[in-house]
Image (cartoon, rainbow, N blue to C red; front, side, top):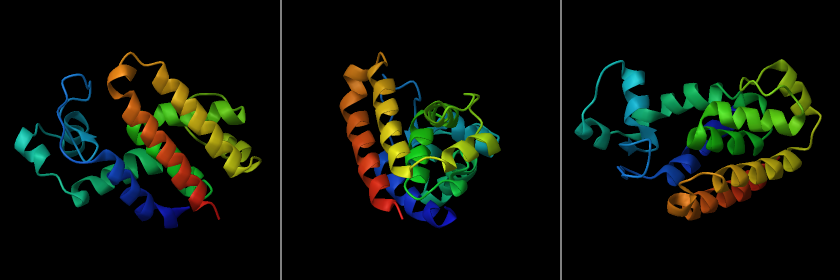
Length: 170
């Protein structure tokens, strides 16, 4: 629920780390998990590499809240499930995380979590959903062409997210 956003953001930022510009990462210049394109869309102007290097937690917190936490309706999800969905949304896009949750609960996979999806989620065990999301996420990663380059890190992150999400359950 809403009480988990700040804690979830702290855990997420540990996963995201600092400034990177890996040549094989399609996201390009990234800091605190926010790509240059996402930040430029947010501030509605072009930004320099130095501006990206200088990003702070305060600069990115509202981006994460609005573009991922709110978009995935994490305030309406059980403790732990909220973090599992949020972390995957940030890592792979809110639509992908939403569609995975919808697939698991049997909703139409339109990528927009709404009343129907939330109703179906409420009929399920949060623990079961967290574990199923973990498996869906791992299968997604393993199907990517860049798994050989980034797979170990993604798999570690996915496992850490699973463990943290289960620990958060009420």
